[in-house]
Length: 173
Image (cartoon, rainbow, N blue to C red):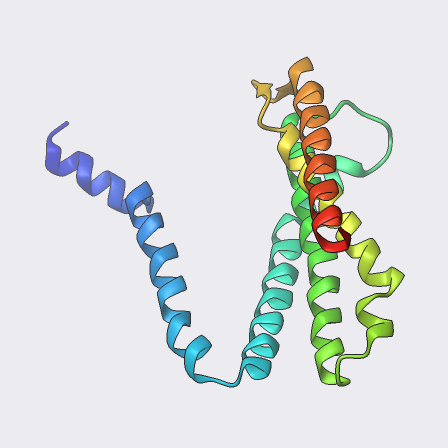
């Protein structure tokens, strides 16, 4: 196959290079610089909270079928991808609630009772659990979790506790 044919096949298949992904991410961040610096901060948080909630809903719609197959009964063995999609759904679901909650908090003049509520605390816990599920998929082979996945998750948990202790100490010390 000639170079032209190979290149045409890549374009027809819609493949994206890693450098293109980096460029798109950089452009997205740069596009937010003017509004972050020029628009009222309260308004920007409301816009970005809305974008985050909308994106999270889109992610949940996109991953819903795969997540349902992972968790539905009857009982069955999970593969690495099942952990991944369940983690992604958890981060998106609880993230949507968290950012909608932060939007609400700003909309009602920032009451302490809401930002310090059990509801928002549980959303953070849900996001954390989802992130641990995602982490576990980094130690798999041919879709099967390896024993080191559980060791890695344990190390991350210990690291998380250490970081939490530092944050608590520096905030209350």
